[in-house]
Image (tube, rainbow, N blue to C red; front, side, top):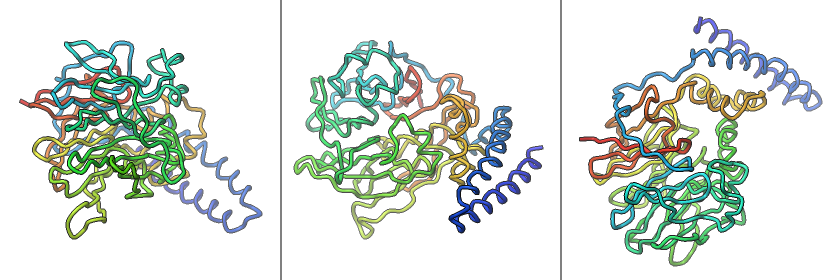
Length: 399
């Protein structure tokens, strides 16, 4: 049945593309072509949606995976959701995490306490999850401490690159626009403590964080990877045209820095030293949508996959018309997200070598304990695991 449907889909896809291409060559009939495409494509997409809902397009298993993450411990948040990133301060305190209402929380003596906020406008920020207010309340994503100063640097999706001192409080804006354009979706960062340089990403110049699925489905490639000099306060754009620029991680020897391209399901390496300095290449191709990437003490890297890629995400990633058609369907956020993740909540963490080789794949295949993870931080034999959607963090012992 699946094979037969795939053949039918390919035939219809080719017909649709011919109609659209024909319309683009004849300007007067372009509107007619679009209407024909909509009339034919939307019912077809609806069929795909129906079959996906039946679980036919669930993500395939990952070779060499170990389904061990159901054994992880969960630490729940209180009246908060979406701990995107986890970081420990220079004294080992924490972890600290940013949540959906704009606060940064610290785990202290088993309790979550407020450490900082990215916006001083807190009057309308009492709801744990309210995407419509994120641009007012702030939405802290990537976090990193400067180990010499103790300052916490923050990538706030709407408010840009920020910093707050060791005592916490209201964060101070550092970068809110680049080249005269406001940062729409500041996502992650890493710090070179020796050179006082921050590497950070802006996922899109077209879409805000709350529109992240539209960015993926339209194959938006307006993401940027940048460098901020703490002393001179200058910003340099290192890479442009990235497909959902996301996680950032500096190599142990500082010879290169990695940046995640979520939509392309890959990690890009930007060389900082050596004969390839200033150039970039593909560090790793991944079996899903990667979020943050973090280096461990051995110089290896942990990548968190928001989800693995099934057939529907692959079609959306290959044909922007398919993704745009999905966006036109009367689907809620949850329904659209369900399609993108293959109808299956799960967690996948991948460890890469310093050369980009897959060393280990750990999963919660059924999402029994963890799901939709956004970051994996290895510390003292344990994995601290974050999720941009869930109201808890996970801890998994590697020993």
